[in-house]
Amino acid sequence: MSQFVFRKSGHSGGQPDSQCVEVADNVTATVAVRDSKEPGGPCIRLSPAAWSAFLSTLRGGDGRAA
Image 1 (cartoon, rainbow, N blue to C red):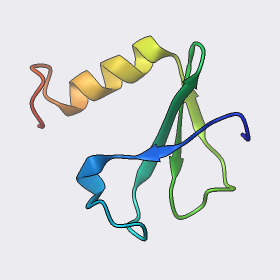
Image 2 (cartoon, rainbow, N blue to C red):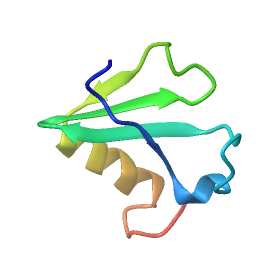
Image 3 (spheres, helix red, strand yellow):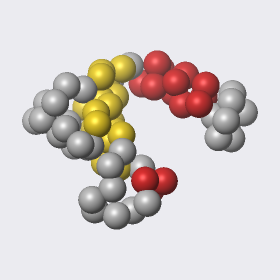
Image 4 (cartoon, helix red, strand yellow):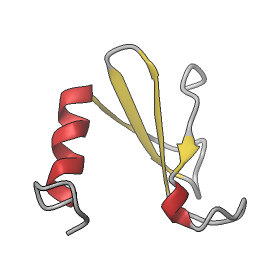
């Protein structure tokens, strides 16, 4: 996982110790998602298309948070 550069969402409160999901999209054709509480733990790897579909579903399909 060392090639991934993870970042937290601005919606996580912006605090350095806030716990949330982290995303890395710096590797070609892969979006990695992990739990910020376990940075050395497992991550889920998705294609950019699958990640986009996931976000669209969370947003209710119209770009707004569901």
